[in-house]
Every structure is written in C-alpha cells, then in structure tokens.
Image (tube, rainbow, N blue to C red; front, side, top):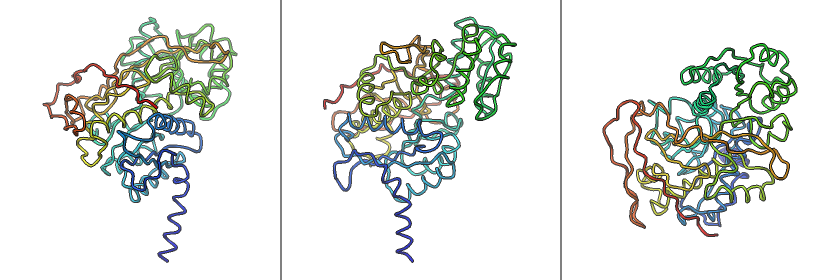
Length: 437
C-alpha cells in the first residue's frame, strides 16, 4: 500500500517535472532552487507562459546560474484554479527545499496560497495580481511584489486625464471589484467626473447597447478595463461605430499588448494605454531581450515577459551580494531589497513595504516599419511610483553600501517608523555590467 501511494504521488508530480526549465547542467544537488507557480493552461495561460518564458530567457543570458552557482527551476501549473494553486503550493513545500518562489497567477489563486508560501521561509516574488493588504498592514518580509499593482495604473490614467484637461469620462469594465476600485481611484485623484460606469456581461462578444450608451453620454474620453477576447471585441466594435475618431479611448496595458493588437487590426491604431514597460524603452537589456525572445519563441515580448525577465535579473543581483549562498536568510533579504539590477522596465527599486518604485508610461498603438501594430512610448506619466500604503506596513529598513566582494551582505538596520506619507530615500540607480556570454 505504501509503495502504491508513493507511485501515485510520483504520477501526480509528473506534469510539473515535465515543465522544468532546461537551466541545470547535471549537478544533482544545485545550490539554488527556484519554483515558479504560474497559470499555464486555461484562459490565463498567456500571462503565465509569458512570465515563465521571460524568466527562461534571462536564465539563458545568465548561463543558468546565479552568482556562478547552479540553479534548478521547478515549474508548476495552477490551471487557473484557486483550489489547485493551494494544492500545488502545499505539495511543492512538502517535497522541495525551495529558496525562491515566483508566482504568476490570478488574484483568487494568489489569495488562496500566499499565506502558506510566506510562512515557508522561501522568498516569494510575485509577477501578477496581489491581495491589497500586502502593501500595508499585512506586508511580509518574505514577499516581494515585482509587477506593477493595478492601483498604479489607475493613478497613471488619472494623471493623463488631468494633463489633457478632460472633465467627463465613462469607464467600461468587467462586473468585478477592479472596476469599482478604478472608479474610486479616479474620483480620489482626478477633479473630473465619472459620468457613467458601463459593465458588459462576462464573456460578451458584441457591445451594441454599451456603444449606444457611450454615444449618448458623449464624454471627453472612454476608459476601458476590458482585456482578453472581450477587450479585442470591444475595441473593434468601438471603432466600427465611428466612436474612436470622436471620443479618445484609453486602456490598461493588459488589454493592449502586442499579441492582441493583431486581432484588433486598424481598430487598435492610435489608442493610448498605460503600462510599466514599452518595447522601445532604451534600457541596457531591453533590445537584447526583444531580439533573443522573438527569435526563440516566435512571438512578441509583452509586459509579462519583461517582468519574468526582471525576476531572474533581480535574483542574480541578490545572490551576488551573498556570494551565491542562501543559508543566511537575512542576508538574502537584504540583497533582494537593494535590487540594483538592469531592469528592462527602467529604474527599479523596492520601497520599505517590498512594493516596487517604478515608472508608469503612456503608450500609443502605431504601425512599425514592417507594417505590424506595435507600441510607441509617448510619455512617463508617473516617475518612480510609490504605493500609498507604505506607512501602514510595519517593516522599516534602510539600504547600506554594498558589501566587499565575496563577503555576505548585512541586513538593513532598523529605523524608527516614518510619518504617514513619508517615502524612503532614493539612492542613485547603479547598473551593473552585462555578463558576457
């Protein structure tokens, strides 16, 4: 009976093992173990697969090592299910001694497993949605948010509406909390009026009533939170109804990444969206990422690819400060907090709640020299965004100078709590040299 149970357990783990990245070189007991829990099947598979493939590309650029130490990567699929995510996380922690866990799953899946992950003494690097409390009172010394939180997108939209002196908008979004949160953010940060909130039914492919409502409202702009197939179908019908020429449309980057633009055809042209990354950003590794990724995978780089790529670069930078050793968890945490790495998204550092301080950009859809729909960087709407919940997080730390070569970094010194709204000092970003291949 015990043998049968062991066999069944092995069979259950086979899909995860089959997805392991080819970044090891045969060492049976590598120094560093990274697990990735991502959605690799179902409706959210593009986000998870792009995150994994972005990480994979960076690992190839790094020679499959962090700080010259062997890395083993285990990849698990939550299948878009919160229950599966919780089960996968439990089995992972029971069977693997993991140093780092990278997550690229939906908000329900993340909420279901985040507590057991942060209690495992493995560092969690999140590349997607996150429960809101983790930015404030529920922040964790084991959790690091690499993805741009959605509230930053809403703040960027508000900044754009203010800069353009728009006074009346209609918001189109799913019947979900994200729509209510967007409305609340706009009303808090922008002096204009949200005159109407349009919530199409889930899975809608036609939008005649919604388009008619937009025409009657005649706002200065329409803000769309629709993504995936709904976002593509809405953009096409919006343009076909002749509204695009009269009422500017602005969206969030998740609905306007390059794989979706091909399906929009000319309906996507000239539409604006807010984003944490753009393919034409002049950063040290962005052009290399785009060239190598598209050659390897035959599809365009997205913001999710960029975030996955950054995760590996961050881990490499953190491991350099410890000489590749993971046993001193305080030293590893300090290495992650310093976050001096060549982000493809531009300047990057962590605030004291382990949320990112990053730029938020405005992009416009255009045709590139090859006639393909592409993204053009138009402006930086927010420079070095900060979460407004920093003061509610009890963690307090400051950066220290880098440790001498070969010496482990010391953990940051505690500092007294800062008054509400205060932000940590910003040292200049140092860009380390790219490792030769």
